[in-house]
Structures are given as C-alpha cells and as structure tokens.
Image: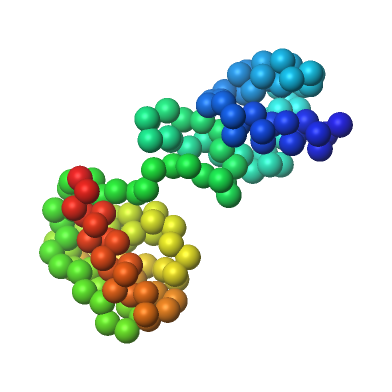
Length: 150
C-alpha cells in the first residue's frame, strides 16, 4: 500500500501544482488513498520531495530528479560586480569588484552543471574548475549569457 501511495504522490505532483501537504492529502483522498498528515510528511521525506519555485513564481512539490525550476540568473548587483571572465585549460577565472567573488561563486554553483567540479571564491576572483577542458569555453559562454539575461 505504501509503495502504491508514494507512486500516486509522484504522479499527482507531476500533474498538479501542489504546494501544501493539505492539498496533497486532498488529492490523494480523491484518488482513493486515505492518509494522515504524519504519513504524508514521512512520504515526502522518503521520496526526497522539495518545494521549488516555478517560472511563474509559484512554489510546488517536485522530485529533485525532475526539477522544473527556472535556470539560475544573476541579479543586477552581482552581474554589475563582474569585471571580466576568461577560460584557460580546465579553469574559468571570473574577476569581480572586491568583496563580490563569493556571491558570484555561489550563483555559478547554482547552475548545477555536472561539468563544473567546483568554485572557489576569494575576495575579487572566482576560480571555476571544469571536468573537461574542452567544455571550458562553453561554460564560460553560459556564465556570460546569464550575466546578459537580466
């Protein structure tokens, strides 16, 4: 019964924009499953569901592997703090105004690209380590595009 209920939960969050446990319980009841708030809470934890903001600004439950959140963007303050971006080998170097490297590094980490091994933000420089040197220029361009889509 538990696995069927959890499968129903996954189907419901794919079909509907469900953003509260109460709404999920109601939808489950409509589908023929009776569950308490405590049971739903455990199911959410076991399924590793998260709330993510959709493109329209509304939060809903999603499965992390099927996340539909909009692509990360720099806000204007971060974008204006970047002075230049360049790549060499398997690294990208982002130069910022003093004190802005760590917030910029955090935003780059939010891209969630599997080719990015990690970022290190100092005071005015971010070093981005790329898994495949052939992809450095592509990721560098993606960061530049994020800066220009404000």
